[in-house]
Image (cartoon, rainbow, N blue to C red):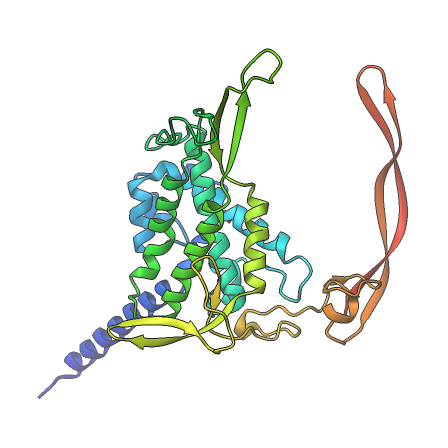
Length: 361
C-alpha cells in the first residue's frame, strides 16, 4: 500500500519534472532574448567573474558555451545588440509598430517570438548586428582570435593591389551563426518557427556580405598614379537596415511542408514569387498594432506623436487608426543668434518658443 509520504514525493517529482520542461520550453521559445545584452552596460565587470557567462541574463545554454569559448567577444555582442535595437527603431519610427522595447528579457516583447513580419525583421537585424560588431572588433584589434582578413591578397582583375586591413566578415558571420543560430538549431528542424528564424538570421547576414565595398588608396605625388592598394570594408549599418527594411516590405508568407524526409517552408500562395536566401519570410499575419494588447506584446498607438499634415504613416489619420488626436502646446528650446568668436568658439543664445504637438487618442 502506498503511503501518503510516497504519494507526496511522487507528486513533487512530477511537478519538478514539469517545471523543468516548462523552463526548457521558455528558454527555447525565447532564444532571441540575448538582445537583452544591449541593456547590460556593466557587461565587462560581470565577465571578470570566472562564472560570469553563466550569470548573464538573456542567454540560453548554447550561448553561455559560446560566451565561455570567447568571452572577450561578448562586449562586441552587446554592441551588436545595441545596434540592432537602434536600427530597428530608426527604420520603424513612424509605422503602427515602432519597434518599442520592454524592460524584461524579451526586449521587443512577444512580437519577437510570434513568427510574424516584425519577428522576421528582428531576427535578421539582430543576426546582422552581431556579425557587424564582432567583425569591427576584429578589424580594430580588440579580439585575440581574429584580426584583419589577410586572405584577400594579390592583384585584382582591375589591376589594383589587395592590401590593407580588409574586414574579416567571415569570422563575424561564423561567430553570429554560432551565437545566434545554435539555440534555434537545438529546437530541431521539425520546428517551423526555428526554420523561419534560421532563414531570416542568414538573410540578415547576407545583407552584410552582399554589400561589402572596396576602399582604395592611390599612390603617387599627385594621387593620379595608377598604383592603388585596396581593401574590403563592410557597408554602414544604416545601409544594412535600409536593405532589410526593403526585404521586410516584400517578405513572403510561408507554411511548413513535408518534402520527403525534410520539412521546408514554401510560399503560402502560388501568386508569391519563390523567395531567395536574401529574402525575409514569415509564418503568421501581424497582430493589430492599433490597440493595446498586452497578451500579444502590443502597446497600441495611443499617445504616439503624429504629424497632422502628413499623408504618410506618421500622419495623424493613419497612425491614430481613425481615433483622432489631441493637440497641446510644448515649449522648445533651441540655439539661436549664434556668433563666431575669435578664436575659436561659437557663442549662441537660447531661444524658447512654443509649438503644437499632436498625439493620438
